[in-house]
Length: 157
Image 1 (cartoon, rainbow, N blue to C red):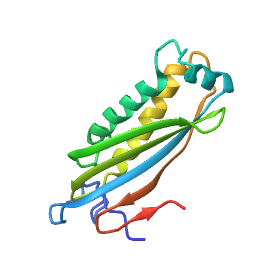
Image 2: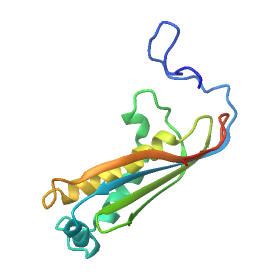
Image 3: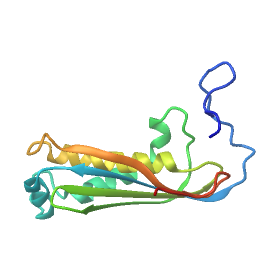
């Protein structure tokens, strides 16, 4: 494992200079889970949440968040994203799995954009359902795959 790239020799935070890196196609996928009561998920699936279509709003929130990642993460490069997808699916009677995939052609990866999309989609599910289930938990936020760039491909086992 190489050293941390966001610090100079004196320990000061820096934005990594990617100007000399080649432009390559890059993709990253991140996942998160929202754990809730069975009644909460049943309400979402039945389309009876008082704030509207939870999955549709969370999907849109995730896409919008990916586009704003550089505004949220201090040393993140602003990137021209070519595609963002956010999918929400009930994988049990208590768990919604969120999968966000982001693509670009650029000099740096889109892992942070995928993580931001998945996390904001999860936060949106929480926000829209907190009135009926304050005990919901957002869990397992992680990068599950990335491709492109110098470090090559990665797949979470």
